[in-house]
Length: 147
Image (cartoon, rainbow, N blue to C red; front, side, top):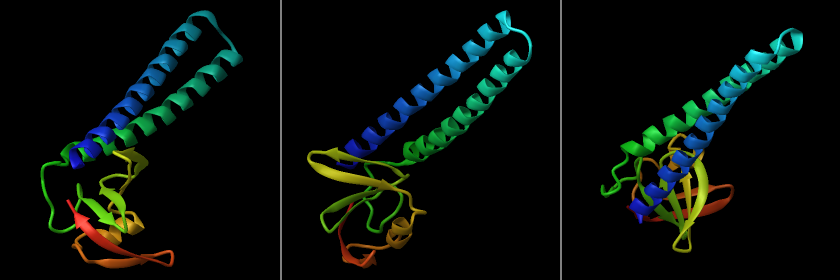
């Protein structure tokens, strides 16, 4: 199951990377085309706005590339005794993938939540083992399995 989760998240991030690269490329092309046929204050404002948007997209792209780099380092075949980056943790019938914060996914009718080890829940889980119990927002949880 861990390999499926990892592959799904890697593909999700690769799709985002492709979209952002296309958007950045489109803005670059628009700026080139705009530069050929315009002059004056409106032209400068338009180029400035395109540049700002391109910087925002580049920043988001870097964040996604950083997330993908973390996922790419995870060995899905590794079985963990203690919760670590790359662990799939089952707690109260919830599945948590300790990696990077990503949208929840559903695989084989199981909901998997990817979370960062720096998140409040990730910090509580890191280094613990099966049987560890913890409380979040007034709810008690027990770690059932660690893969």
